[in-house]
Length: 197
Ligand code: ZN
Image (cartoon, rainbow, N blue to C red; front, side, top):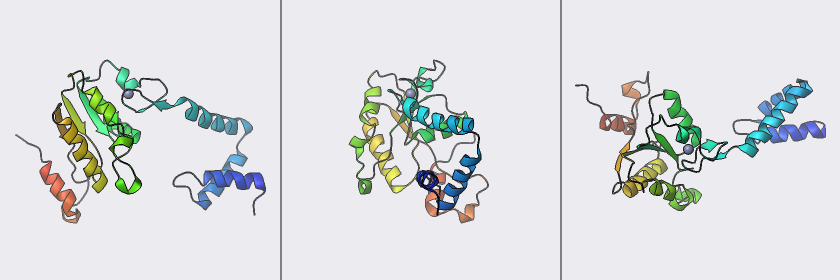
């Protein structure tokens, strides 16, 4: 149907998450219409990001430098670490502008079904960060799912003897209706209630 170079481009685009055959075709046609310079910039940006972006040696957040900007920032609270599954979660928490501490990205969650055990995750390095004794609190912020719960409990147990461990409260979404919330969400919201006094 498509001339081979175009078919190859569509095939590659279709490998991206959330891109089906129709979207891949639309993107490919769009790319062909763009100027040479634009297309050059796009491919260069992809190659550059892939070559230059690695993981922070301390917290495993995506970073072009050996130590990421968050870890290097002297204004961040060096005594608190927030444990998350993925770099995407760091970005989400940073957008709230509520959190001023450091992070630790696990790089996944414990999932025996997918063959992911604790040894595949950045857990040992997290324990090592407790070594200096200056971490006053670890906040576990992992999405609520069976695997997420397993991971939270596992990490929590390991850290409890070393420092104060807390987990973020899960509750109802803004604009959400109490009567339509599932029991687990509602139970968790109740459990995570805060004092108004
Ligand atoms: Zn870092």
